[in-house]
Figure 1 (cartoon, helix red, strand yellow):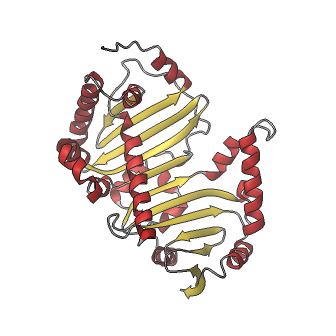
Figure 2 (figure 1 turned 90 degrees about the horizontal axis):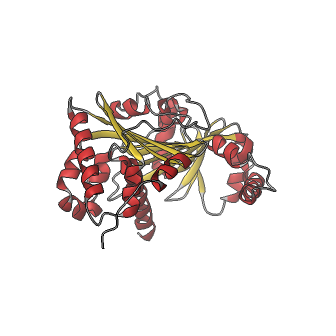
Figure 3 (figure 1 turned 120 degrees about the vertical axis):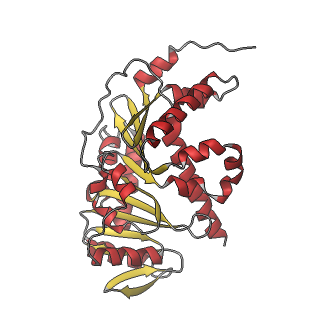
Length: 338
């Protein structure tokens, strides 16, 4: 029971953090267009092309991917002697290679994650690691490490190493899955069966989300908005809850730039005209928050660094945590009332 409560709290915290970051851009901050900021990586394939999406659980409500290879390239581009953090990371990766046979620096490309189930009762998770590592060697080493804590079973000719709560499976060549036994079996079903189409709302936003981002994630907002733990918040923010509930799916992509971090969020709505209504509501709310005396300084600063737009059934926002943006914020004049 305690383990479940911890998992539930972690899932709720992760979901709230995702929604909080995604909606920091509530408002159109600048009348002048921002200076173009060069991403570390060029625009790649859409996030919907990620091969790990075939493992998407049917009752998912959060999905995302971490471009591990790009992260390693970014963190180790300086010589280890000049970057102590990079040197420490290399030591951890060497230790991981000894234990698992997987060279994290060279043999892991992307890490996808999924959260499914009822977050108020039985939320479950799945992680997919895709790369170029030797699956047979990795399974042999991992099985040796987990022999005392897990048992091995066979499902559709695939070995699952697990206990009652968590397990792993080398599903395909150079694809390692970690997660609850139920989701591992579901992933095997998905891999063995015919290709499944992505849910429409998820596909709509991921088709327009940069798959080359360091991290991207997508969520079904209504699942988060209806959490039991948010009952008091819903009672105090009824109009905001109704407005955000119009979103069928919401994605956020985090991209490293030459002078900081860019965060882009994209939400889709189902009914015609609702995107403009949501855009107007969020813009008005942003304006009232900035003009309200006593507003949180940190949140107001984030709003000032944000932008918001709408096109068709989509509402798109961005948050610039770059050197240029912070210089503009530093130059912003304010009055502190006594």
